[in-house]
Image 1 (spheres, rainbow over the protein chains, first blue to last red):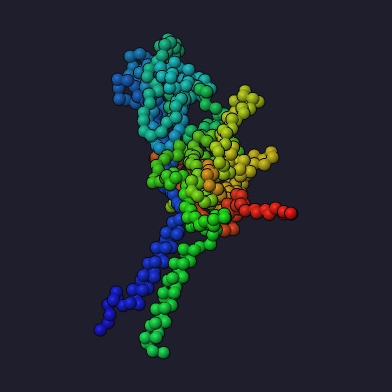
Image 2: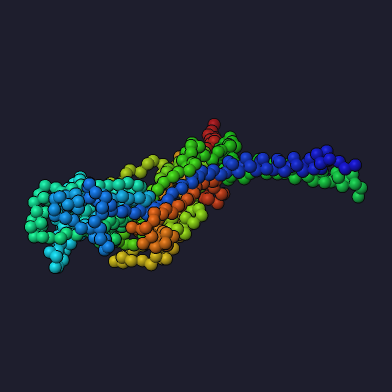
Length: 200
Length: 272
């Protein structure tokens, strides 16, 4: 009759021997070696900004096929300049700077000219830096990340109505193009070609 | 030979091996961390333990972070590198009773390295007291300039890797990566700490711009892209402390007697 495993003296001795070796070796090794570790989970993300243009009091966009929005000088028109609103929605995990380029096209019906976009729009001057005289851009003065929405143009500022009246007298037709542009917080020198942020 | 004799021989051999094994581990050479012999008149044998930071955890669990963006370490004109780099810092102190070898290791997991994760391990020289903080002197010649000053992390990386020598402002990316890899080689990040000594560990992490762009599908898929994307990274930071081998200089130094005590006997010559 075969002896059971644990009743066999030889196997018991081998088992005791192996257990002894492992215990002594394990304790000795623990005295010789310490290890600490930490796992880091991280990510880097891109971002996207979208300008949202509208006119207060109407849902019509007044945007033509080439993406230009027609602005009226008539205070009673739905697309009166004073009703023009611009906000920017943004999303993405990356940290970025935002600028919005606003380019106006003035025409008298026969020829079109680009005009320095110095229409006095009402903006939050604590948040937006007006650099249109340099590059047609408003710069948002804070770093952005995640999801959000920012108001840019909320109407006309002081003196705006008088300027618009002047355009009306000249029978000017005004169109505007709005474009949002985001860049990584560390790459604006390379992407925007500027040595420092305009408001600094 | 009879069966019982064979059994006896085998049993004896087994017990002999067992006893020898226990004896070996109990009486290891004096240069091990298990115990060492104090050289003194009394000839003590002392059990000594390896310990760092009073057994407190300095690296533990999992941490979640977000890189603000990607950058380029080998680009001389990448002035805003520091804005998006991350730093992990900790101090390791030998609080045990024997000299210890301390090693720092970073292991990127999965596709992290392929997708642009880069790191640089910097370990200070061992010290007993905290070195005085060095105050950086402002360069008054640059006070009036409008160009962006380079951040401290970027400057340190460039300096330690010797990326740009003399008037050079460019380096082959592959060459820069080779220098970085050589710096991070395990043998460069091992320090020997005598009892009571500390070492400061600093690890810079960043995401390499061109590699993450490649992973994302190009620059146009990154900035002002139609869809938002996120590239994940994970990496393991390890601190390993181990005993020194008998050939390590620190062990030799530790075993030198602090003072050699001898008993002198003098005999006065007496003459009568």
